[in-house]
Structure formats: structure tokens, C-alpha cells
Amino acid sequence: MVRVNKTFCGSDPSWANACVGTNGNPGYKEYSKGFSRAARVLIDKVLEEDSIEYHIDDFIYPICFNMRHSVELRLKHAIQMLESLAPYKGQTSQFNFSGSHDIKNIWCYFKRKSEIFDIRYSEINNRIEPVIMDIADIDPTGQTFRYPKDNNNIKHLTNTQLINFFTLKSSFTTLEKDLDLLVEMNEFLIREYSLGSFTKKLSRAELFDISKKLPNRDLWKNDDFKDVRDNIKKDYSLSGKDFEKAVNIISHNYEMSPMINISIDLLGVSVNDIKTFIKIWFDRHERSISKMQGKKPANDLMEEVSHSINASHESWSSAKEFVTPEIMAGLVSLFYFSYDLEFSELYVERYSNELKLSEAYFLNDREIKTNFHDLVSKTNALENIVASLYFLGFLDDAESIVTDYDFLNQSPLVKKARSRQLFVKNPAFGY
Image (cartoon, rainbow, N blue to C red; front, top):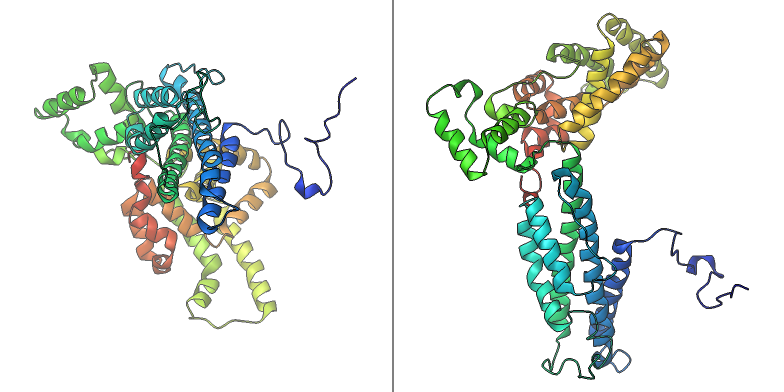
């Protein structure tokens, strides 16, 4: 007969029931949050309530235990994420999660493996390490704040007479922020490596660095290019074949290729096709743009509806002779890519998917007409497409469109794209 647990069970009220086990499927990350928040809440209570109820000498043990355990769980989660990255470079990572509780060993394992995989881990690791080592010194295996004595009956903390709560809170707060950044970095690198722009010796960031050091492609036949090439090979420990692989990726990447003066064509659509679409889009939205700028008074509702219907017919009449599956997919890809201007590889991936959809739409006149109207009716279509052009390296073409349609100067997205801030990733990640 199965025993019913009457203590650890669900009950009323339902809002007081916590989800555990496979109900929510928590892992190291979720567990660590609980211990971390518990530590912070207790620290704040002790510092806010100068009373016997929250006595410093009593609460130091559960607080430090929760802090230390949350850090152990966070590091194990970081190792899990690193294990998902390792195969990209043919590396292996086999860590004994259940059998290891020595926080120094856990940390040294992650630090060594992460920096072998990608040197960009060095900066964040150096920020995290001092507090991790402080924890390792005072409580290496998680026993110090759990029991008054160790397994050999020796009293804990005999060499540590005082622990200041304000110092404790400051160190732990800083460490938590840095560990949060480490999670963000792991997630960033998982996205980055999944795109394939790396070699076994070079990360995407290092390829960016090399593209900045290379001269324009048309100068590579000059005698002094050999010196540049040899210096790069020396700096990054590259063979001739390694260098060729790097150059091949740089030459076919929308963000890197402009740095060596190589221009990659847009997918499915030319700049002239974009300008044709923009003319159709502007004719469709000219009245609303004029109202927005205070150049045209508002009209009655019936007139607006009538104008919208006529504009819809006119826009399709202008578009149906020039729109192809490739052009439609190209325009839609540029529009939607602007929502996640992070990696140009995502633009290539989106175009591939959009082309399949567009080819299906063109089997039915009604479908392609609806698809086109869906794009041309979007009030943000122009600014989004222009922002994508900036990011993909078509700076002169984007500037030309902005010059022709001055209202784009007021668009925050266009302003940000023009300043090229979107080319610069988080400095902590090496861009």
C-alpha cells in the first residue's frame, strides 16, 4: 500500500500550491533562484529589523548556506549550458553533477573549459572569481553553515570571528549580477554558434576582429598584404587553411564583408525593387503621414474608408506587374528582420523560409494579393526595411531613402540604425 504524504502535498487555497517535480520541470536555474531570493530576503529582514526576532547571530547560518548553495547551483547550470556549446567545436564536457559539491573544483572546471571554448569568457570569469574563491575558502563543500562541527568533530569557523551583513550583502549582490550576466552570455553564445559563423579555431567575434584588420579585398594582390596575412596567422595561431576558412566566412557575411569592401546582394530583391515598393507604400500612406505632420486636416470617417479602399486597389494595381515570389520574400524578410537586428545570418534564414511561403502564395492570385496588402498596409514597413538595410551594410542606399522621405528622420529605429549602434553587440561578449 502506497503511503500518502499529508505534509508535502497540494491543498486549499490553490494559490498556495507550489509546482515541483515534473509539474514545471525545475532545474538548476530554478532551484538556484529560490535559494538566492531566500538569502536576500533574510539579509534585508536582519538589516531592517534590529530586534531579537531577526537576530544576526541566528540568521547568519541559513543566509550563508542559501547563498553558497545558490552559487553552486548557478555554476552547475553554467556547466550544463557549456556542455550544449562544446560539440560545436568538437569538444566534450562530462561533469559529475551529482557527485561534486566542492565549489572550488566546480568553478575551476567551468573556468578552464569555458576559456578553452571561447576566450570571451575570460572577462566575466575574472569578475566572478574573487567572490567564488572567498566562498570556497570558508565553505568548500557546503557543510560549514549547515552544522557546527565537521565529520571529524572539529568546530567550524574558528578562524572567522565576525561576518558583517552589509559586506555580505554587497558581495553577494555583485556576484549575483555577474552570474546573471554569465547566463546571458551563455544564451548569447548558444544563439551565435547555432548560426555556424565560426571555425574550430575562431569564434564569430574573432572573425569580426580579423575582418577589421584586413585591407580592402582589391588590395590583397599588393606585396604588403602578405605581411598583414602573416601577422593575423601568427596572432591567432592559424595555418594557411585556417586563414582561408576565416576569409571565406568573412566574405559571405553581411556584417563583415563591407569591412573588406565586398558587397553581397540582397536576397530576392534589388534596391530598385525596394524603391518601387516604397513608392507604392508612400502613395498608400501619404494622407496619414501628412496628418501626422500636421500638413493635412482630418477628414470625415466615410471619406477615410473610401480612400482606404481605393488606395488598396491602386497599390495592388501598381504592384502586380512587378512582384515575384522572390521580390515578395525579399521585402517581407527585410521587414521582419528589423525586429531582431542581432545576427545577419537570421536574415538569410528568414528569406529561405519566406521564399517557400511566397512560392506557395503565388499559386493562388488571392493569396499573393492578400500577402502583399498585409505588407504594404503596415505603417512601419518603410522604417523597418530601412533599418534592415543599415544593419546589412547598405548604408548609402538607406541614406538615399531617408533623404527622399524626410519623415524617417523622426523614427527612433532609423536613428538607432543610422548611428550604427545596432552593429555593436554587448562589449562583454567581445563585439
